[in-house]
Image 1: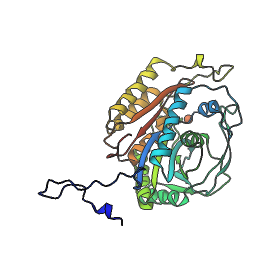
Image 2: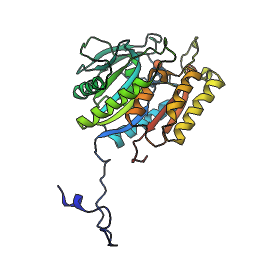
Image 3: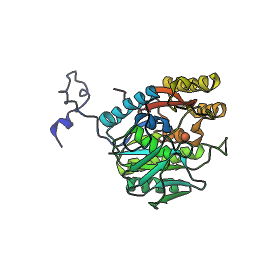
Length: 326
Ligand SMILES: [Fe+2]
């Protein structure tokens, strides 16, 4: 070990002299663990609007303020957090029995949004951190959850997983673990989120046991009522606005609490927000992520908010306790 790491960081007892200051590392500390959690919604419109080469449909843009928020998040992930792995929980990989973990080493194929196939037909090809995926499944199983390791490479990856991963890291150069949503928010409006607390705990234990630096992605929109007719030009921004003021005000109530911090009051507020707005957080992704971080005593950094076909969407970053936004 280099000598500089043995320099005491506090003055010796009884002394007033200051120890020589160790040089600050140029990069972020490389300690393992969960280094950030992000609310990272997946509407296909955002990818359609960006025109990446993987997506077949072409657009003239749209929803820029949300896409700029994602650009800032991408920079933080790439330049500050430098994770070994992105762990995503997404509401459209629905498993009716148990929590499934994708353990396929190299998922690849085409992901299609079933309601908006004219906006999202995306070719994906990425690497899974299989060791961590298996560790999460084992920890979850050990904590009493029904779990399954997905091994079949023919299973098509859902658009909510692909959407959040592309928007957070379009280079796809960071390995991935993806988790299913073990509930069906469109049938069980008052589904309990308590299992998501356990899945979060299992995720944290597995990250620490494997020594990974992980960024968590909760792939959820907020208020979730939306239009049923699409303009002739899907990205016609004249038509984009909140579904109604009730939905908007409730999104702001949740985001103000997030910005104020700490996260503990969100435990009560998230279910209230779901009840009021049919929020997509009822799939549990946001609760899973905050539980994995131990409901930290920090404020979240809301990088942006905007509506997509009337639904509310926010890009938010939380850091673990003891770290600071740069
Ligand atoms: Fe969705």
